[in-house]
Length: 433
Image (cartoon, rainbow, N blue to C red; front, side):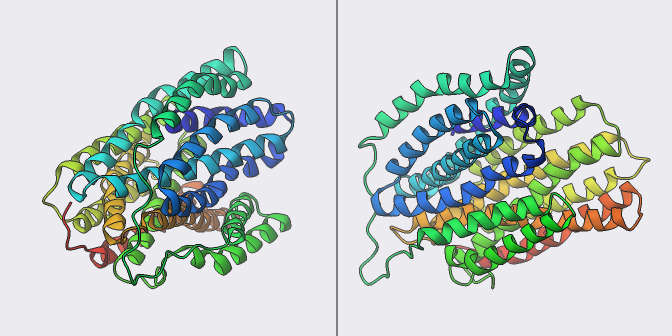
């Protein structure tokens, strides 16, 4: 997780420069959206592979692919090669994330899972503090290619060591109880269709011309047609147990990543905040997420669904701060603090939902549950962000002020926050972490 987080956070700041140098600024939304779209596919592939053969194989494959994709991107001579590198990176990231959660479900007892998940969150602290500024300096003083190729050189040896250690560390997935139906394994084309729909949707909401509209409509059609086949039955109806747990992951992730996308944009375009404020907001969010996750790991007697309620309400508070930050009378750091508060909510929210998903999954199904959680995380991000983009662009097109448009876009986020708080009780488990 440390290697994955360092590589993921370090390359994001250099993508605009890379796209400009390969004459691909017009296709930058595609380059930026490839990672999320591919992680959908990687999560499905990794989850079902982990259920069949154990988590160590997709985890090892994901690590090897993560190094290879850095070489592909670093040697890019066209925007399409750069996009291909980002796609492979998302594929590797999805496989690793799901494999790690599956391994936790297959190896660790219930009482230790919250603490292990807190440790996984802590792995992102150093990468979030060091990765982006170091990558920016290397790009400014040398080249953006040095960031990708340097990361490949630095991570190849640790990755190979981890791959070697994974051999025989833990066995294959536990067999399903007798009489149970095997985990549904959707055809590869279903996962590919959902991944393509996510990419088209992200590209479609980045503009307002006919081409973007058609892409958005095509992506929406693919998601509606195929996404439900990757999720537990009853997810959209918030059925008790695993289905509502999966749905809650999408709601919370959609709120957080929408704030992460639009708060910096508000600070730059409307509040004229200095870059240091935005940088501190991202750093504070990473530290707050890890700290909150550490706290939830120590609340052993607190039912997980109550922590989900608490996380959703903290996210609602973050939305209120973002709305307040659009007012001219408030200082710029009011909106910036929304990202930090939202990260506190996610630190309670995400590990608790992961524990609940593993608890609700019978033996041999943890990989399917992990891939479903990964799928709804990305779908929630795309859906909520897309709806907020529609509200923002509609308000701006109607002639409202920038602050009023951002207020409407942020206000929309209260709906998934409150809905998550109301539905959290349906994810309740008799097993306490």
